[in-house]
Image 1 (cartoon, rainbow, N blue to C red):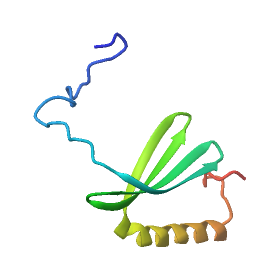
Image 2 (image 1 turned 90 degrees about the vertical axis):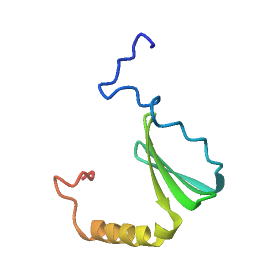
Image 3 (image 1 turned 30 degrees about the horizontal axis):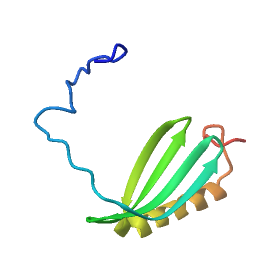
Image 4 (image 1 turned 90 degrees about the horizontal axis):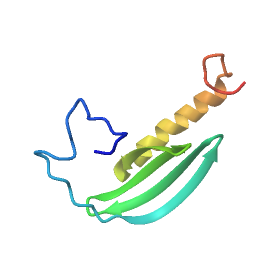
Length: 101
């Protein structure tokens, strides 16, 4: 153990009864980067033996979070996103909206 590491209260999850999965070969089909304020979003359309998917990665000061949307769900995802954009444009920003104002 490295001196600044602390033992996890949940035990060591990297070893145990679950063998580590081998890496899955993924092909990148398209990629776009978008900078919004202090956040960077990377949209990457990929394909692997299980199918196509969109990986959206948010990077804020080196901290990354990722969501993955299977390709069959992209149209539904876009419909919901379009509705959110319309609602955001229709409603004036309020004090609790989180939008700059």
